[in-house]
Image (cartoon, rainbow, N blue to C red; front, side):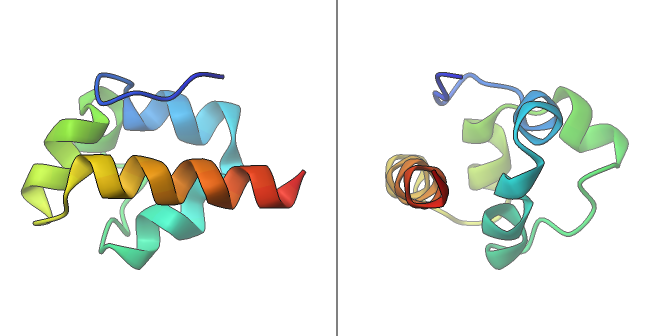
Length: 67
């Protein structure tokens, strides 16, 4: 799965549940809430004061290291 700024957080968690700890690290603890199901990575990062490019790089590396 390609993950970009426009990818919906809920779609990422559904496709890659192992990504959940990375979201939790930046304060996204309600992964099943309504916001997560329709919020993009960019929107979620903005809401939590996180740079989306740095987050995407970290998330991508995290998922690669699990393989």
